[in-house]
Amino acid sequence: MIIGVPKEIKNHENRVGLVVGGVKTLVQQGHQVLVQKNAGHGCGILDEEYQQAGATIINDVKKIYDEADMIIKVKEPVEPEVNFLREGQILFTFLHLAAVPELAQKLVEKKVSAVAYETIQTQDGALPLLKPMSEVAGKLATQIGAYYLQKDKNDKGKGLLLGGVPGVRRGKVMIIGGGVAGTNAAKIAIGMGADVTIVDRDVRRLEYLDDIFGTRIKTLMSNISNVEETVRNSDLVIGSVLITGAKSPKIVTKEMVMEMEAGSVMIDISIDQGGCIETIHPTTHDNPTFEVSGVIHYGVTNIPAAVARTSTYALNNVTLPYAVKLANLGFEKAIQKDPSLYAGVNVHAGHVTYKTIADDLGLRYEKLSV
Image (cartoon, rainbow, N blue to C red):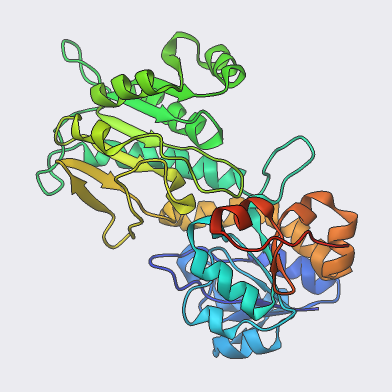
């Protein structure tokens, strides 16, 4: 199989779909790998390293899309990439289609086989390809929130130190959703010495979090009263709600935001699925924040790109086995043999094949036949 690795062109997206080790593995198993020139520079991988591993460096990105049977990326294709895709081509990347209906429609029209990292799901319900990026995004969210609470950033923040000092209160951090991202956000917030509250609708998850963190956090059941009160009294709110493949429900309303103190910060890790905060919208690393009623909102859709080297290697650790399976077996046999890979198929042969996405977007659902 010919595998193409284009350079990411989303704003400040410095990750890359394959690292040198991945190229070497695929080449040793008889596949050809085409890597766009400078594709790995953002995370410290040189073209010469790819060449030594057996890849061919291609300057023209369209040539990669024209020749490759499978495209391996990090983020969803944007213009002009989506126009380069062709019928029958495998696209292996993060997609988050519930939040980008126009992309879903284009993938349907192109009749590509789109396999989304975020919906590959094992029998125990785990999301192995999403997990490392959730870990990174969670940890970064607290760091970012602490930064924007400072007063030196455009004179907007509260001028608050999350950990406080003796005689001065600690900053209050609310984390909505106690999954992988939320748990990792809590780890950093606790490490900084903040006053941390995690809100979740799953009592078993709250019990687990209480067991591992003990009295270092407070846990609350997610209901409108608890959310309203906690948002109002928080300095930093981190949204990390996930429903696999679906749009994130709006947990924090505009009215709640209006009651927060000016200079407070809201970060929505789930923004790539539409966000769980009503007042937030997607932003970029170039222009990461905006204000609503004096509250700073951070809605960057590719948070892990800020630490591209860590993120790239963490992502490749979990994506490579699936990429190898697709390359060795081909699309149909691979999804037949691996139910978790089957679950990752969002679009195939001109149809949306993931029901939650189809329902969210009002598109026709077609069960994937294998």
